[in-house]
Length: 241
Image (cartoon, rainbow, N blue to C red; front, side, top):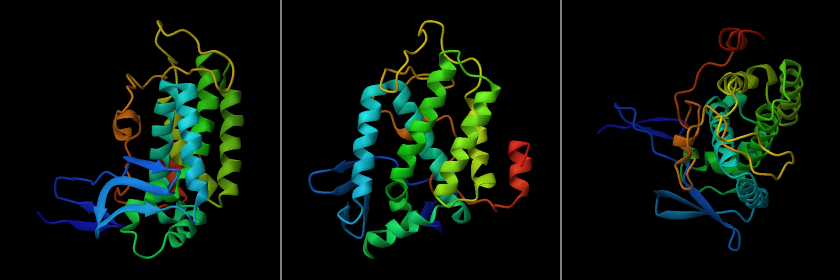
């Protein structure tokens, strides 16, 4: 079987893609543990990127507090991140900077993609959860979506991303997460950032341990062949610039 490389991606004619979305973090020893073994490297050191360890702890707290909704929305945030990572012109500069801090003998850049983007992914997941809780409670309207999207845009600007283009996949996610909000037998989620949040439609079931690529409602994966990002993307995909 012949593999070709696209920004560190191992890909076959049948579109086989090596998974990089299964990992754990050892906070005690500052190690990134994944299911890949490149050049004999079984773990990646995190001493130079403590914010990645903190992001993992924040994610665990989020998923423990929110439950199924937290797990589903983290999966969505991760795959929004994948969209940006696949298009270098959309990637925040801090991702490359973190990659350089990891050292030279760490394997391919695809392996480190979820690592270098972890802090931003967790921040984004919280933004998604804020919208979904109010939407599922029935206290959300078009005007709230506009304000929320503006807030996401401000966050992307802080990350030094081209906002209009970077918001395209967020707009697609919002289209997936439109009415209906949840199943009739789940009830409305309680108020409060740390209260349990049911998995919102279109997510069907969110068992513990399910692969993140199966949890998300989005089609992108790290290593997908990148698109050419230009100003027409915002019009053709999102319907507006």
